[in-house]
Amino acid sequence: MDTRLSYASSRRASATASLMVIVSIIIGSAAARAALVPLS
Image 1 (cartoon, rainbow, N blue to C red):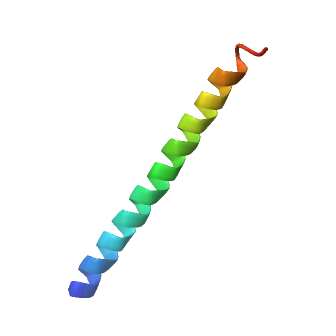
Image 2 (image 1 turned 90 degrees about the vertical axis):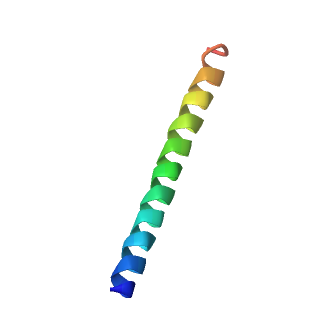
């Protein structure tokens, strides 16, 4: 029971970390695109 609980919490932590990485990539690409628009 305890191992299942820790397994679920670790999966939730990894899912949250991957979600933060995806969000940061989206924000970074949007910022780069906004910075490139005035140049072009």
